[in-house]
Amino acid sequence: MDRKLKKYLILTAASIAGFVICVILHNVTYGLFIYLFGEDFWDKIGISDEPFFFLLAVFVCPILFLIGVVGSIVLIIKKIINLSDAKKS
Image (cartoon, rainbow, N blue to C red):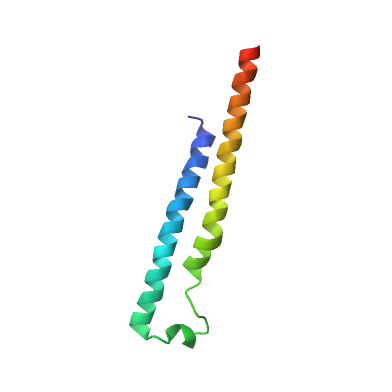
């Protein structure tokens, strides 16, 4: 397997795993702060929810997934084209 293709596939898989981990950490952090500091903790600090892991899960992980998928597809198409050109020669 091509080294670049392997990197793109790893990026794709890591973004999926990162999404799941960020969703879990978002919920754990939200619940833990409510448990430790009371039900009105998030209202006291001026935000209604835990933003860091939420933003990672909603914006960063899908972008990384798209980069990994598009990069993998491009490399696979290039490889197919190069193989067909080699057969013609």
